Image (cartoon, rainbow, N blue to C red; front, side, top):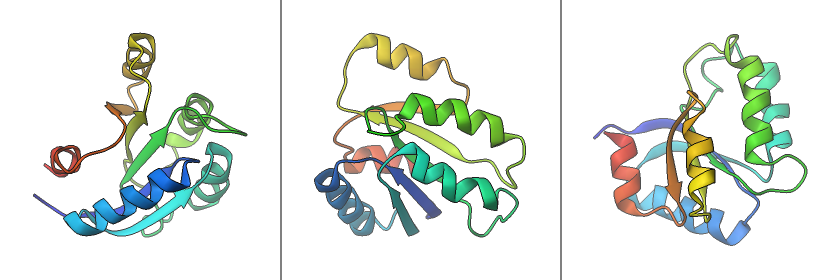
Length: 130
């Protein structure tokens, strides 16, 4: 298993984010973690640095239901800047929703590598790392 350089968590649930960061730390999943509470905050960070390979995350862990800009809206905006990115960013859609419609919708996006039902477990991180 290889260590991921930088991970971006986009999720408004502070308790969940705290736990996920601890799990990431425990598993030595990545060197750096950045957190945004909604898609708009994440896009404001990503948009101006699309060509800066050092500051771009390797992985985005994206929640669906958030205020301001939800995961679906973030994906639509991400697609618009994707072609300018200095590196490929892998997106994992993460939600407490087990609705088949959400899972199917996530898999319609080529940008989404997988759909993971919350909470993310150590096995999920190990699978992402391999």
